[in-house]
Length: 307
Image (cartoon, rainbow, N blue to C red):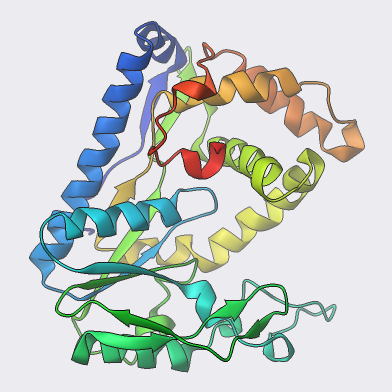
């Protein structure tokens, strides 16, 4: 059982809409709740006395920003902390595992140079410093230069989809790693019937982020979503029970902000482009009282998706 188990909760949309009448006050309350969870997680990590934190979560769960906020909360206690992305440890293009059709299997754990990762983590545990590889996503090859990392007697937080897979830490000293699973724990209902599960909220987050920052169309994001979710079941959620802590990255006001973005998209795609999925999502988000994107604080975790 994780050290901090947070069960999912089902909240009526009408209650969220009532809270939204308070405007920015509601947003501030939700942001403070999230920050308190980050600081509670920092306390758990420091209490454990471990120097390596492995942090994983499904797509659009907010793991990257949460990892950095966790590091900041640890540093606020006077302890050095740094975040490392597992993406830095990707193998070179020609070394990627392949799917049956010959295409590159980016989500396969063996696309990661596990030997290099574990060598770096063992150095951190033993000396508090290491030299990290740097991966160039344009060439899909490692750069010749390496990145120095030093945390002294502090904490290194490693974030990535495979962070909880036992293969990533199999050669580290027993009891040297603290594991965190990041995910949304709040879902929404109407008349007691669940209408917005966490998976749909994450899809909405990803639709906004992919359009704003990655140049992806709504059609592309929606059509690839089933494969993304299937990959999560294989590579991430199967190891959830091994986490020492479940970190909640829900914001109750978020569905109101997303509602103002997603609801107007109804009818934008034809059926064969993913229109049914989009229209269903837009219809359900239309039940949420819209709140302006501008009200989201600049330092909010949600800015990872909303810009």
